[in-house]
Length: 213
Image (cartoon, rainbow, N blue to C red; front, side, top):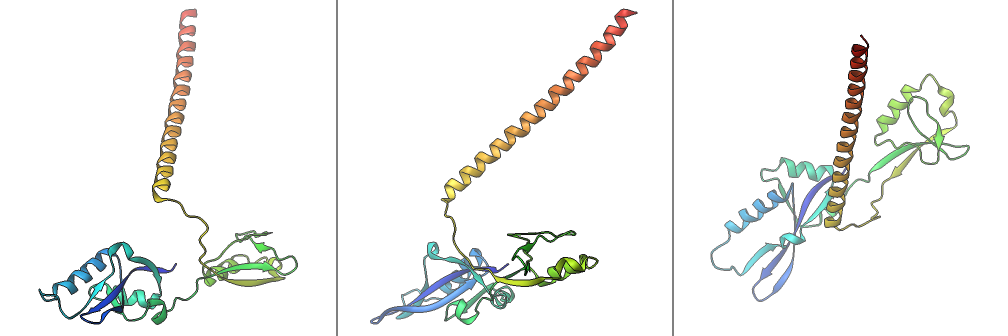
């Protein structure tokens, strides 16, 4: 899974010349970004200097995916922040996320994995190549299963398929949680009712036997 970091854009202002882009900073989290910016601002003189740089407003900060190399630099830095002149994806390009499937040549169907694999149109996705190796070792006693198959590598491409207002999402999750709690309560009450009925029947039978004597 790709690592994430906070991206902040910076703008340089120079008296008499105006403004121009001044690179980026990337941070482990929002608090690291706040601390980094505060540390920079604490070093500025009381009066506005002729040349200074300033960060973008907080609501414009972005959460981005970063490469393992850049993430390691961020984590190992004292302030959990790294200053860059170019966009992170230019200096530290992301490696594509790869996944794997086993495809049968004869019909193009994919393995479902597991101890006794079958084949269908979707199949199983392996996130690591060594996971495929583990699976193949597991079914080694059935070599005929994969005699006519290829290992297919797919590159995962990020594609937005749905956008939901966060307020609506929270509301739907809260409503779902309420329904689950109500259903759990109903089941508990139903179970208790059955236990009470069984206990009542047991006592009734016991009393009936006693009265017959």
